[in-house]
Amino acid sequence: MSILTTQNLSIGYSKKGKTSIIQSDLNLRLRAGELVCLIGPNGSGKSTLLRTLASLQKPLSGKTLIDEKEISKLKHREKALLISLVLTERVEIDNTTVYNLVALGRHPHSNWWGNVTDEEDDIINEAIKMVHLEHKAHQNINELSDGERQRAMIAKALAQDTPIIMLDEPTAHLDLPNRVEIMLLLHRLAHKTQKAILLSTHELDLALQAADRIWLISNNHGVECGVPEDLVFNGFFNRAFESKAYFFNAANGNFSMNYPMTKSVWVSGDKTRMYWTLRALARAGFMVVEDAKVHILVTEIGWEIGDKLIPSVEELLLELEQSL
Image 1 (cartoon, helix red, strand yellow):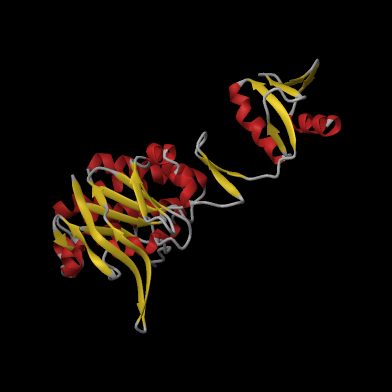
Image 2 (cartoon, rainbow, N blue to C red):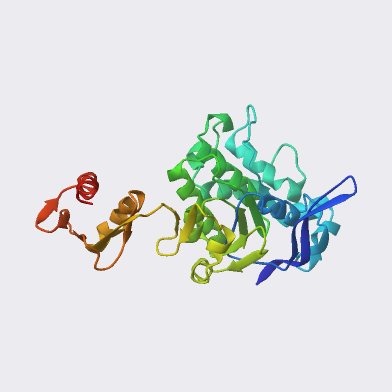
């Protein structure tokens, strides 16, 4: 079921009577129980779209509807009951515990400043539990790691108990293990709570694995929406990130550099080692051509060229450099 829809939405900026349109005529749908990742190159309008959908910024034209209600016409408290927002900015609050931060998410419901009821307390503690921060509930926010702090912000959004959660670059300041953990957490929460979770991200590889659906925004082609694998098969990623320096490799879901290739080899053998072998060869300027003069057989214990067994990639590249 679609919770949020847009109708002919155009986004951008108006300043001193001059209008700058970034994207136009967008008709999007956000469904309950799905993690949706908004991906696109810099300048394509990811943050502008997110801010417009959250009604932090006015649309240039068109409208955004949540449960058939036009978001821009709602009062602030009504919006806060429909959308919870987690922004990129690092939270710095002195003398505030995780519990107190998460408790702020309950304000649109109870309008409290101070004591909480037993029911509110249960909701706050459940949100903290869902992001696995029970052991840090009464610890100061400024004493947490970046990953823990981000989970605390997600718990605050959960405590707000809105049908939609939006996050702007939630993994921007995190190392790889924490980026993976946050993406997996958001995927699990979308399915468990049946909330619609929309996040903008540059983490293409993680989004391809974790997202139920991707909104792929580009500078000239609007927003393509779909299951990640369908967007890969249809070539939309190469079109959105078109560059002479790199290309989207549909075989592995990563971007590969366009190296100048002036030499050729033929490669066959062990599939596990093949991917890394081809990466090293491309970096050294070798294209793979069937029946080329030099044949490399990739095995579990090394690389064979003729009768010679080569034990490492470094020695393989040296051997090729000397023989070609």
